[in-house]
Image (cartoon, rainbow, N blue to C red; front, side, top):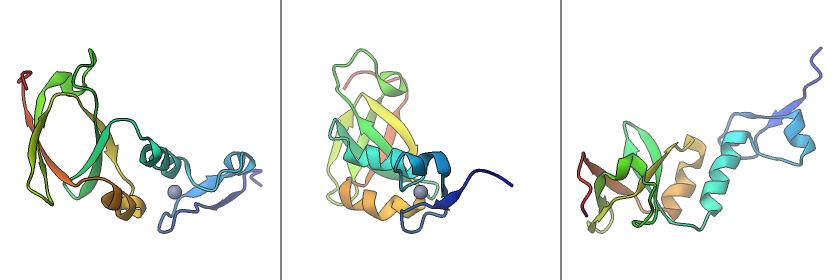
Length: 124
Ligand SMILES: [Zn+2]
């Protein structure tokens, strides 16, 4: 018999399981959910979400002056879905698709945008 014990992740709608070693550390959520809760709690930088082929993807808009830039510093044209406001940004970092169980939480707390990457364009 396996020595590992599992229990259900505490996130409603998440069907992943929390492994024994994480339970021993007092973790109630699976590794993936914890990653995204950490993202949610991170007050640094501006974060946005965008739909991409049915997935809700999380991006961070980091300092425009940083030496290290996401997408090689390509300028993005970003449109806020709700207001139609358009702005440009040159330091966008992709953080991956958010698990479906957490979509509601992120849609409530992050602006939903459309991103257009201006390939090779570095000037804002
Ligand atoms: Zn989970």
